[in-house]
Image (cartoon, rainbow, N blue to C red; front, side, top):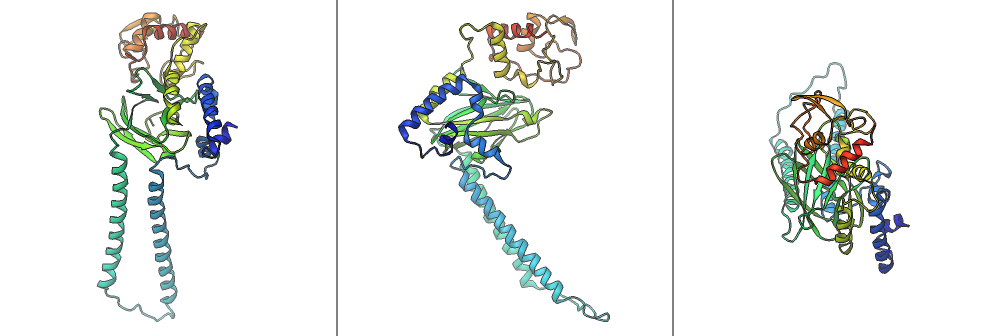
Length: 366
Ligand code: CUA
């Protein structure tokens, strides 16, 4: 039912649809498995040949230019190959003693085959440039979103909703970016380590995310639903895990969803360890630390508690102090074997209670 509602969002009766969506928004927050549904994302992944949804105001323009270039290429391919084939047949050598006639050049034809493609290339450039500028210059009233790329997850923050932080996670299939339908959204992006690339195919938008620099672009989503989000620049070992979901909601559900989804408070009756496990999934720890002892970019958390380790500053016992220091200042004491790894600092992102919860969670991983 939820699925069919997404597939034909405009056809459902407005009142019933609104009620259903509110219920679904609340439910989706409570039950992360529901995030896996959503027609946009389903359409995109149902078959490699499935047509991408045109889910932003830019989509049609980009597709049109793309089709123009494809049509132009097909036209000239057929024309050039056809003429070549025809000439091969027409002028092939007819007898053994036939000599090739001497061919001089033809100024008129040479001018044409230079000038016509040059004009067409200028048309493609101007068309592309106009569309590119359109995506670069955002309307002044756009909703502001800040995106940070790290090896290997995205963090999304909303200046209008302080404290709300959404993180991509390959394990949880979590919603990474929530935007309202029919409103311009401006993204300001930067990276903490290497070059990433923020890519939402259904919106036809893509921008490099560069360390030490801010890049921006904007879009306006036109369909309620969920769409895939990728890192489109090879950024290391787990590049392919840097994926997420963009959720487009009606403006009236947007704020409520965001406030709810951004919460990372300990719930009533929840143990510290269970709370720590949620933080592990929601704040990107799982991108680098496994729970089963298998090696990822950082040390596995299995059996970590109370372990004796040799670091670049001497030997340590992994206890509360060492874990807290490693969360806030990852480069203070690096365990031998992980010297080349640049873990981002979580200063200002996890408070003391949340770090304690993570410690309690690590204690349970024997
Ligand atoms: Cu980040 Cu690829």
